[in-house]
Length: 244
Ligand SMILES: [Mn+2]
Image 1 (cartoon, rainbow, N blue to C red):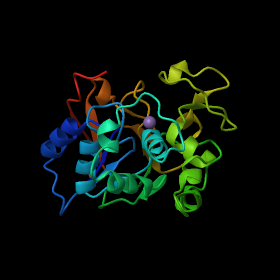
Image 2: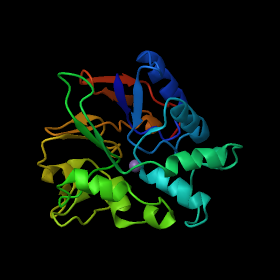
Image 3: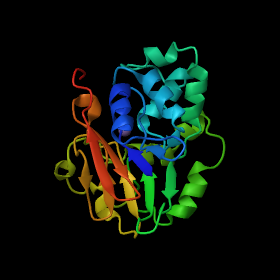
Image 4: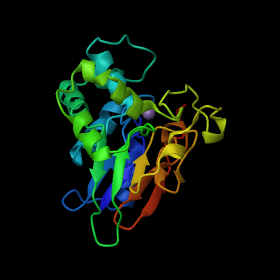
């Protein structure tokens, strides 16, 4: 089975619960992260290790970008919960795993009756129509600090409400909080293939016509949500209740 899990944000225990709940078998199953494996939650290093142990599959999130740029000193450190990661003996190895992550991934149907999907942390901009071409372009090259700060990385890991021209709003509320000329990014998406994403905790888990959102805010006390691509099924386990 191929599973896609929502934003972990350093929530290692909920991930352990999920793997148990779905009887994850690393020889048979795949676990894909929608990004933001680290930060805000209590156990970034542990969550990262666990996710790496089950295959290190996924796409890059904005908190992963922040962790990489803060670790290299390119960005100043803001308030974060990354001390455990930055002081870990395997820190370089863990960070390198994050740095290798692509921005956009096509997940072909894993079995008969299942549907194709695209995986991205936040979303895509209205002008991004040929996703195969863009994925090849965005994911290629050295994932150095300049790449991490590029416009495409920024858009794919941060968009929620945007203009038809691709201007991003700072609004973090649900889609009805997007004020004209801003609309939820998926309102512009007319592609055939479903896009699975995270990043929008205040929208929560939802299923749109062509999209599925998996960030149900497990770091804020919501559940951790995962989607099984094989049989189009959602599984949720309790998140971190004691963090904010
Ligand atoms: Mn995010």
